[in-house]
Image (cartoon, rainbow, N blue to C red; front, side, top):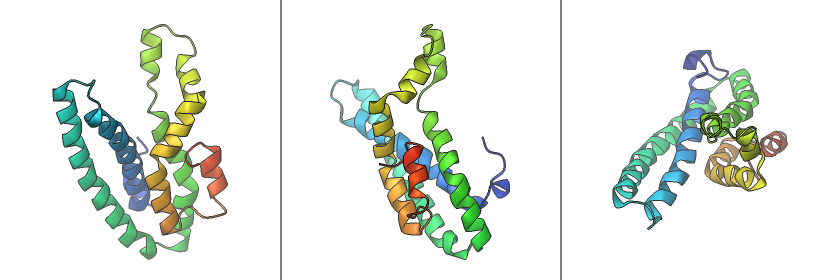
Length: 155
């Protein structure tokens, strides 16, 4: 999606940050699915398996980033921190599938869904674990938090 990991600003650190963004968003959806009695039992079981797998991915990615981040040069940390909000916003934007609205011939539907205040609040809440972790790493600080909030990635 963004090209080879080593070509990203911050290299592999940014790649793992993007993995975390995807996994955290999917985790919230799958947790809701596995707990919803209205959902078919097979689908609920599949969601439960995904939650287990995502937990392993998230754990590995967090550990990797925690160990890698302090070893990066100041320039790499700054580049990754500057690139991260736009990259995570791109990932979060994928939560609305334009093709659904095109198939149903709902003109402007995808944009309406993305601009819906409830959807925006949900995305920020669903990314809460990620943005909290990035704050602990120092990737999100007082100077950059406004950008994350402006992009709808943090409350």
